[in-house]
Image 1 (cartoon, rainbow, N blue to C red):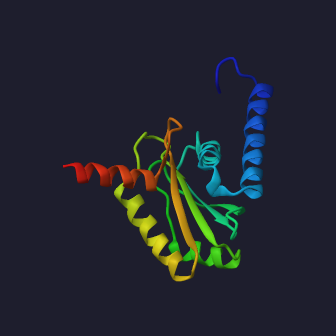
Image 2: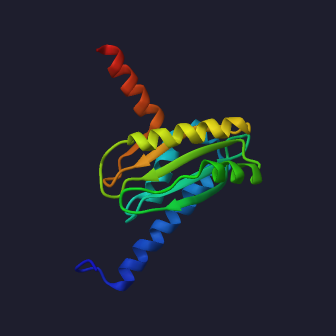
Image 3: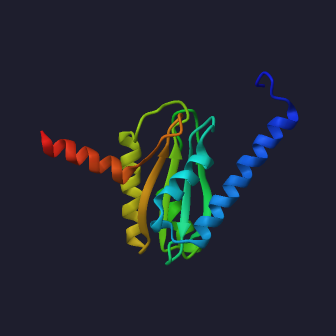
Amino acid sequence: TVSGIGRNTALLIHLVHELMQISYREKLQDGNVLVDPVVIKEYCRKMLIGQCVEELHVLYLDTNFRLIQDETHSRGTIDQSAAYPREICRRAHLLNAAAVILAHNHPQSNNSFSEPDVAITQEIRDELAKIGVTYIDHYLVTSTGIVHTLSETMLVQKSSFELE
């Protein structure tokens, strides 16, 4: 639908995007996720940028913090998607995951985490802790491709609050 871009060019662009996703997934499966958060941010950006609706992904990790599975937990609307802590815990248990990373997008805004985003993340973190699964962080990809992490956002908010 873009002027000057034909079917073959559009297919090539889509293919390159898919190959980049595979490459990042392999890096996460082969390496230690916590060693290079830049790789996680890029992976999340490539996975979620340009989506028309909100998606929530859960990255399930093994004891060495390698990716076991990346699953789309839910697809929602232009401004929300559902999160089911019980289902995330059930899936973590079935995959024998040791840790979890959450990732979602805001397809029509450049905003950071909303209050509901923070609240559901805390609920998920608490439920995962009950079954011995570590919550690592929550990544948010904005409409312009900026990637925020909840841990960085909370640290900035805490620092701003302490300065007042």
